Image 1 (cartoon, helix red, strand yellow):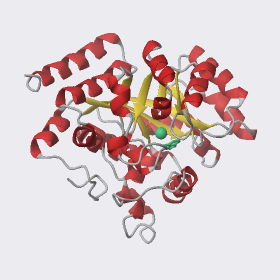
Image 2 (image 1 turned 90 degrees about the vertical axis):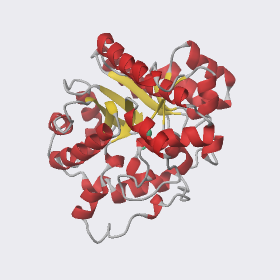
Image 3 (image 1 turned 180 degrees about the vertical axis):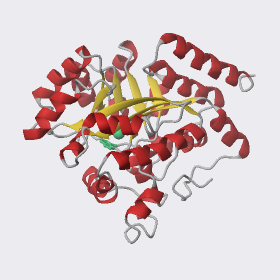
Length: 345
Ligand code: ADE
Ligand code: ZN
């Protein structure tokens, strides 16, 4: 089935799988709004540059490095986000698309540093994103920041954002190999005291030691990616024992050529899941990978032998980690369990 971007991924479903995944109540807890920018908006913004679909939609395309990916990120998407209007328009399409794929709950992040270059302030951007959500979709909004963003006006912005009422949490993203500067742990700690949820990217381009370091220093209980935890059985066991969830993005990992992931069939999510780690399934930056959330599920079924029941378990992990009250959590999980009855015989 063509993706939202008009291309065709290698992960196509037969009608039964397609229907199963579409109707499965799901979540998306790792989605960068800039990296999900709809192609139709980019084409309107710069028809010449976007006249042809980008090469990175090719199924066999692999990013040569994270730096190359980041350069393309700025070139293709970041330039589009010049104000609240653009965040609103993008979020409207992105969130409607999540909802049409059966998502009940979404966590999305925007890059905080963008605010240094545009006129609208953080609360205005947050309102613009929130007001774009369809009624039947629960939305949580995160500000993403890089290891080296705590300088000059960036420092004030970081300090300020953890006081914004409309912001649900913060996320550490960008190049993982930059030093984990001491401000990060302090800000993460104070953000939690202000009621914000904290997460961090780790174990995507750095190994399991970095996952341990992030857990030790930032005290998060959700890691974005975290897949390289597989390199150390002790780290994997720690994720289980300490109930740390991983927001995994399998197609992103393949296309970004994460160490040890030459193809979907070698993706460690199978081993992490079997070891008892709470993993959720997500699309990360769908504009850059040409993927849809549904295709992540197809890929796991087709290349890693996840049964329908196991896909249901993965979907329920999303509700398990969702930032909602327990009665809502129970009602989503009940809906999912009822849906799964027909597939569990
Ligand atoms: N920002 C957007 N996508 C990212 C990724 N996959 N890893 C780290 N930072 C990101
Ligand atoms: Zn990410």
